[in-house]
Image (cartoon, rainbow, N blue to C red; front, side, top):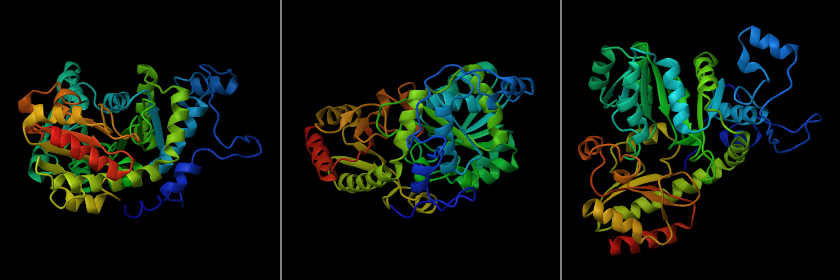
Length: 400
């Protein structure tokens, strides 16, 4: 893992320091080294609270946890420092964060230009549900300059992509996409879940909003569900209003778990990245593996872009098992150490098959159009001893 991103102008400190010290500091008035959980749904009202409501600044008031809570404030400040953002908001899930950002900035009649390679539920939202509210989505290869320009020439409110696409690990050329989105008057929204703020800060590369499923690397222990959106105060103000009205707020206890997880994020990401690259190199040489997708490999189409835009190529990989989906399923069921499960970013290694989990709502043709071929396995590489992981994958491949 190479050097971490340089400090943002908002802070003199680097990510590993911010993960521990941003957002909360013990002091004479609050001696707790760890920020306490404020498990209260409501707060005592006073003249200041009423003034905030009358002036239309309800998000600044202590009224109700759906609007604001001290424990959520701590983790939001910590994430904002990591992202180099003016404002970060936490949500009940990653999809709640995506929904709030899109609803806030793409009303009826608006167009979204989205990368064709996306997390299945995001694709489902754009393809099958937003159209009911008059929002049209066009899916294109955003790294194809001509396709991008053609799509944006028809207008757009939002350009949407992922730092590393799920599950093909394509690394988006964010500076180029951001430039064209800005010229078209669109906001660039980037789901950076696979990268985490330790490997990439999309806002520094031109994005207007950085999204994360906090369930994944930010939490890091497969014990919470949450989402995050970060951006300028102006961009996030309508998102906060949508959060209040739709009710997708994070619970204070989940916020406490998220804050605790973030403190070890740089340490975990280093292990995830080292293990995933070692496992990818092993799989690339295995006779039962058709292809390995990992940005750290020279064979990956995004290898050069990854070296430029990521501090390290990440902890995810995908590979194609010879014999198609049936063989891939036999491989997954043959593992003894890694677990077959649909999430990612935890300390344990998880494998999933997109055809029956994240992208099950797509047809086979739709999956192949975005690079999900038969036999593809997605791997969230954990922090176990990598030699144990390699041995486990070797045994399962033989059984497949």
